[in-house]
Length: 79
Image 1 (tube, rainbow, N blue to C red):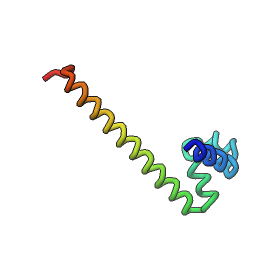
Image 2: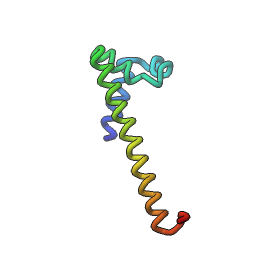
Image 3: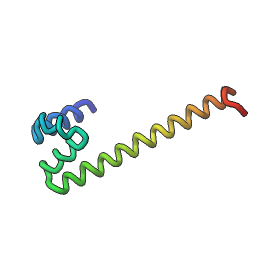
Image 4: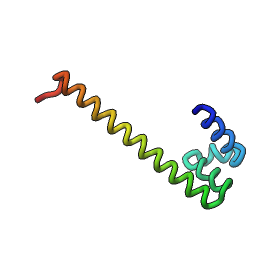
């Protein structure tokens, strides 16, 4: 998994440049996708980011629900 992150960082830096990444850090991967594959790359990276965000939100909800269940089973919540 670490190799994937290293490849993404190096590829983005090579496509966009460090100064562009610093200037547009919120959308740097989208810019790199657009430079690599045009509009299709921009859409692909945007959709991927949406799925990633949804996954993070989903895992947070499940973890919070599990924590609430454990706390309730331990009797630490009011009835």
